Image 1: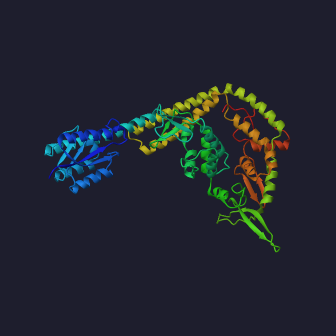
Image 2: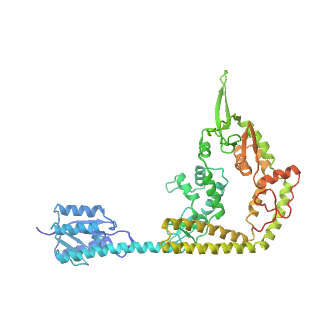
Image 3: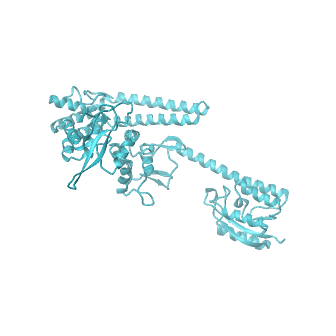
Length: 515
């Protein structure tokens, strides 16, 4: 049989192929070789795909055609153009063993179909596979080192950009503030993730397809530690060198809200009828949640009225709850009266803000000792991280436990670092929340007057938390933290702190504290 050849040229976009001749250059060289040696070319086959893994369509088709004796030879630039995996290389050698393939011609490699020639061809295929494997391992090692240096080797999350010039991730100054606003918006606890999607869509942040983000993508954004300075690569947490968009404190608050969300809250927000106070109150008798029912009342004259009723869910089967329902209008009226008792007078707000100005100046004097303690804590955490790494390297700690403990220690370390930054900037971490609370407390009357039930619900959540109950058709609740002190002071018509106005942990008395 006269030798007939397939001309096969391949190039992929892999890094290891960057120095390989282009397809056009390969074909030109192979045509010259065929002309020089008088080879008959049956077909020219071109493929643009990596040979790392088996499954190349054109390559497999070529070998199938050789099986059918359309040709009995292959001409190519180098053996690594034919195979870089053991399956394809073995298939070619097996064709040689069965004399289905009698000749291989290369520009840069000499081959004869003899035992020695097939042995050398096997070595060439093995070298090609070794090159790919070692390159992959070196690439992974380089990416791990890049992560250890504080640079995330992956696509930048929303709010950041990949800088192709120096292979880093930089802050997107246009989108970054929107992401921060998203976290702040969600931290209020009165919106759902689908509303976050709408919030981003309104500001032009969409998927490449032009559609809004799905719930899973929104959750991924809200739970991504990259936004406060850490990132996870290959299941392990690293400290990043990028500019954080949010504080660790804000991130933790968002995580707390995500974990606190329950199915009842989510279901109430998407029901056909708007039921603003679902998820706000608890039954004072059995402790179950308060839900809402929508009912229509039809009259003989053909008119129809719509009513919202709130009642206990009565999900506790072990306790018989005798509580009856209450109309939404009555509930709203009682809630408004209760909220009004937590109004901060404007004169008090002005006086308290002046005292906060004094506190913010004095706090720098008492913060040095606290900073020293925080730094000792960080040093202690660094020691624990080193011990954890040593125990992992000594195979005392398994990989999963190592990753889990490392994430916990990094999270604690980041919290201490942010506390030190706040103290160094002479900003007590309670002053700004206190200013915000003063602003919210002084706006209670304004919120009540608008009669917006959703705003009332948000305000009631801030004041009472989970301490708002419905029993015998009466709403009762005890304000938490500073709100409780405001309520007590309004009864005495005065509210004067003893020494300073920084709230203690109980929230009922006020005194200066270095912490």
